[in-house]
Image (cartoon, rainbow, N blue to C red; front, top):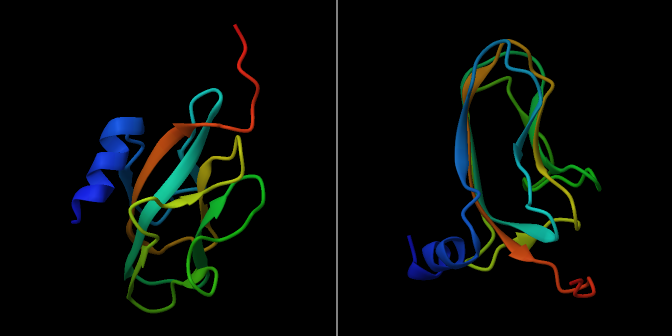
Length: 127
Protein backbone atom coordinates (compact mmCIF):
# COMPACT_ATOMS: atom_id res chain seq x y z
CA UNK A 1 0.00 0.00 0.00
CA UNK A 2 1.41 3.35 -1.01
CA UNK A 3 1.97 5.97 1.71
CA UNK A 4 -0.42 8.47 0.06
CA UNK A 5 -3.44 6.24 0.70
CA UNK A 6 -2.87 6.08 4.44
CA UNK A 7 -1.88 9.75 4.66
CA UNK A 8 -5.18 10.93 3.18
CA UNK A 9 -7.23 8.77 5.55
CA UNK A 10 -5.16 9.75 8.59
CA UNK A 11 -5.24 13.48 7.83
CA UNK A 12 -8.90 13.86 6.78
CA UNK A 13 -10.70 11.07 8.65
CA UNK A 14 -10.75 7.36 7.93
CA UNK A 15 -14.05 5.90 6.72
CA UNK A 16 -12.68 2.52 5.60
CA UNK A 17 -14.25 -0.78 6.50
CA UNK A 18 -15.34 -4.24 5.55
CA UNK A 19 -18.60 -6.18 5.53
CA UNK A 20 -19.00 -9.94 5.45
CA UNK A 21 -21.95 -10.73 3.20
CA UNK A 22 -24.08 -13.72 4.14
CA UNK A 23 -26.85 -15.34 2.16
CA UNK A 24 -29.50 -13.03 3.64
CA UNK A 25 -27.48 -9.79 4.01
CA UNK A 26 -29.63 -6.87 2.76
CA UNK A 27 -28.49 -3.80 0.85
CA UNK A 28 -26.91 -1.34 3.28
CA UNK A 29 -24.97 1.88 3.76
CA UNK A 30 -21.23 1.22 4.05
CA UNK A 31 -19.94 4.72 4.86
CA UNK A 32 -21.47 8.16 5.38
CA UNK A 33 -19.75 11.55 5.33
CA UNK A 34 -19.70 13.85 8.33
CA UNK A 35 -21.74 17.06 8.22
CA UNK A 36 -20.34 19.51 5.65
CA UNK A 37 -17.95 16.83 4.38
CA UNK A 38 -17.64 14.80 1.21
CA UNK A 39 -16.75 11.12 0.98
CA UNK A 40 -13.76 10.13 -1.18
CA UNK A 41 -13.33 6.44 -2.10
CA UNK A 42 -9.80 5.16 -2.77
CA UNK A 43 -10.35 1.43 -3.21
CA UNK A 44 -13.17 -1.09 -3.34
CA UNK A 45 -12.82 -4.87 -3.30
CA UNK A 46 -15.72 -7.26 -3.85
CA UNK A 47 -15.12 -10.97 -3.23
CA UNK A 48 -17.88 -13.44 -4.12
CA UNK A 49 -17.19 -16.87 -2.63
CA UNK A 50 -20.61 -18.55 -2.47
CA UNK A 51 -22.59 -18.10 -5.65
CA UNK A 52 -26.27 -17.49 -6.42
CA UNK A 53 -28.30 -15.70 -9.07
CA UNK A 54 -28.18 -11.91 -9.10
CA UNK A 55 -25.71 -9.03 -8.71
CA UNK A 56 -23.79 -6.99 -6.14
CA UNK A 57 -22.92 -3.34 -6.57
CA UNK A 58 -21.21 -0.52 -4.66
CA UNK A 59 -22.82 2.83 -5.47
CA UNK A 60 -23.03 6.54 -4.74
CA UNK A 61 -26.29 6.87 -2.76
CA UNK A 62 -27.49 10.02 -4.55
CA UNK A 63 -26.47 9.53 -8.18
CA UNK A 64 -26.72 5.73 -8.13
CA UNK A 65 -23.46 5.55 -10.08
CA UNK A 66 -21.52 2.33 -9.62
CA UNK A 67 -17.89 2.45 -8.47
CA UNK A 68 -17.21 -0.94 -10.04
CA UNK A 69 -15.91 -1.21 -13.61
CA UNK A 70 -18.74 -2.25 -15.88
CA UNK A 71 -21.33 -1.77 -13.15
CA UNK A 72 -22.78 -4.44 -10.90
CA UNK A 73 -20.88 -7.71 -10.41
CA UNK A 74 -22.67 -10.96 -11.23
CA UNK A 75 -22.68 -13.36 -8.29
CA UNK A 76 -23.33 -16.41 -10.47
CA UNK A 77 -19.66 -17.49 -10.20
CA UNK A 78 -16.87 -16.85 -7.71
CA UNK A 79 -15.19 -13.49 -8.36
CA UNK A 80 -12.65 -11.10 -6.90
CA UNK A 81 -13.05 -7.53 -8.20
CA UNK A 82 -10.55 -4.90 -7.00
CA UNK A 83 -10.94 -1.25 -8.01
CA UNK A 84 -8.08 1.16 -7.21
CA UNK A 85 -9.13 4.80 -7.60
CA UNK A 86 -5.79 6.30 -6.53
CA UNK A 87 -4.49 7.85 -3.34
CA UNK A 88 -6.73 10.94 -3.69
CA UNK A 89 -9.72 8.75 -4.52
CA UNK A 90 -12.92 9.71 -6.29
CA UNK A 91 -15.32 12.09 -4.58
CA UNK A 92 -18.90 10.99 -4.32
CA UNK A 93 -21.76 13.42 -4.88
CA UNK A 94 -21.85 15.95 -2.00
CA UNK A 95 -23.85 14.51 0.95
CA UNK A 96 -23.84 11.03 -0.64
CA UNK A 97 -23.07 7.82 1.21
CA UNK A 98 -21.36 4.70 -0.09
CA UNK A 99 -23.97 1.96 -0.51
CA UNK A 100 -23.82 -1.80 -1.03
CA UNK A 101 -26.69 -3.00 -3.24
CA UNK A 102 -27.45 -6.71 -2.96
CA UNK A 103 -29.61 -8.19 -5.71
CA UNK A 104 -28.16 -11.67 -5.22
CA UNK A 105 -29.83 -13.27 -2.21
CA UNK A 106 -27.99 -16.44 -1.25
CA UNK A 107 -24.52 -15.32 -2.36
CA UNK A 108 -21.74 -15.01 0.22
CA UNK A 109 -18.46 -13.12 0.32
CA UNK A 110 -17.16 -9.74 1.43
CA UNK A 111 -16.96 -6.07 0.48
CA UNK A 112 -13.96 -4.00 1.60
CA UNK A 113 -13.38 -0.29 0.98
CA UNK A 114 -10.82 2.44 1.74
CA UNK A 115 -12.33 5.92 2.04
CA UNK A 116 -11.97 9.24 3.83
CA UNK A 117 -14.03 12.39 4.37
CA UNK A 118 -12.89 15.87 3.44
CA UNK A 119 -14.54 19.21 4.20
CA UNK A 120 -16.58 20.47 1.27
CA UNK A 121 -15.14 23.52 -0.47
CA UNK A 122 -18.40 24.43 -2.24
CA UNK A 123 -20.08 25.64 0.98
CA UNK A 124 -19.78 29.09 2.55
CA UNK A 125 -18.13 29.22 5.95
CA UNK A 126 -20.75 29.61 8.66
CA UNK A 127 -19.95 30.82 12.18
